[in-house]
Length: 153
Image (cartoon, rainbow, N blue to C red; front, side, top):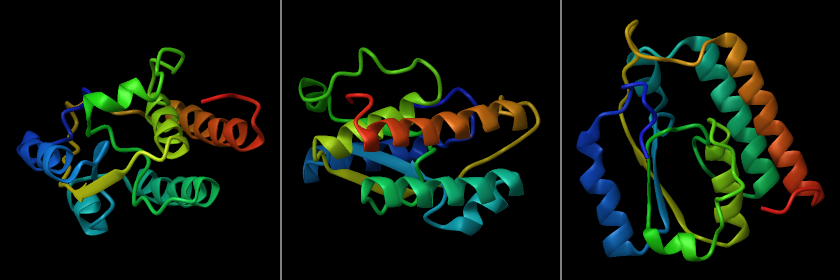
């Protein structure tokens, strides 16, 4: 899965596939935040960097995970996980990324992160501040709904 904003370098795809095939991870996420200076040197806006850290801490606290980033749009999934989790009711927007993490955690499917570089540039599509606030609110809402059992994932 690659978000269409041209931030992610496809050279990491073979490494992602290797972890799925050789080490049996159900999902591999490219993380801009494993090496935080890479995110900033790649041009990630400071406000986005800051809120990425805060929301990830909340996500880890809520789900009991240790991910360095919940918000990467560069991921690989083992086809077999879709026999365990049902994504048919997930959003078709960016919040899908959060919903699938919740489903992976709930199903005890192993997630691996690898450090990646990123590149932000004016021509690339990016979520601006307003839609980012909506995304952040949806992120928190989905964690709340999961934790309280108000939505089945």
